[in-house]
Image (cartoon, rainbow, N blue to C red; front, side):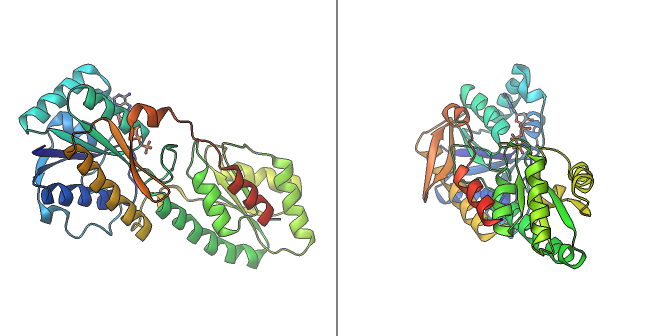
Amino acid sequence: MKTVGVLTSGGDSPGMNAAIRAVVRNAIAKGCRVIGVRRGYDGLIQGQLEEMNLSSVADIIHRGGTILRTARSEEFRTEEGRKKALNVMKVFGIEGMVVIGGDGSFRGAEELSKLGIPTIGVPGTIDNDLAYTDYTIGFDTAMNTVVEAISRIRDTSTSHGRANIIEVMGRHCGDIALHAGLAGGAESIIIPEVGLDIEQVCRKLIKGKNRGKLHSIILLAEGVGGAIELGATIEEMTGIETRATILGHTQRGGSPTAFDRVLASKMGAKAVDLLIEGKQSLVVGIKGNEIIGVDIEKALSIEKKLDKETYQLADILSM
Ligand code: ATP
């Protein structure tokens, strides 16, 4: 393996830069050239590539976003688009690729491997929605962003005696809501894996109010519904005043936590090592304390299940 390409694709996540840095520096340390691809698969098709050196990734480990930028590409989903990408990779002499992104980006990575370019995926997504790995890069930072928001909202919630509904990201996977809700002491956590039981939410609020509780935080994953609508329903059913906060893209940005930086560094470096070992069509993950490589197709076929124990614990502790 003489020349390795690297791109970021799909939604960005804090820690992607730390992963790029690890790919570039580990590859150079092992005697490879590194080509950075701008704007994901779209940039690959358009030929937006440039050689990277040690300085290209200096001073980025602490920065959110991705210096390579990211994009979604409809053209790459077509055979014709992928052929164009292959030609570009041949022109630049790319012999192996590292793709940093979510499940969609991994499907693209698999297609690249099928075209004869060994490709390794690195999970960069705040959603933590990939079942083959305990954590994805960016999840810890997003969770901490939500926990900080909960603390701020809790202060004003207490002053006014209101119930606050905080809407967080998570269309299909409620991990951000569940873990941030447990860490932030939310009264109710509403996630797609379980759905909304409005009577139970209202019962908890009324019970809390009756025993003199001054604040209430309800964490709602976006996949279940909107915070404003839920607030209106709760007011109607309980008479308790509500306020809604939608955290939106604040969860995507910001300096990555130390956990995400370490995870991204280990995963990015592992992806390069796997390519040098001659591996292809794998995605990197973490299980326990071990950095692992899993076949892409197998990794994507594992269904993400609700962490029932954590959900039940959060429920018990928020009585
Ligand atoms: P996020 O988790 O943030 O949504 P993602 O990586 O899942 O990130 P997607 O938009 O699903 O984001 O995928 C990113 C890109 O990967 C797509 O725009 C497309 O170019 C490519 N891609 C997705 N699925 C396929 C596929 N089946 N074949 C080829 N390319 C694909």
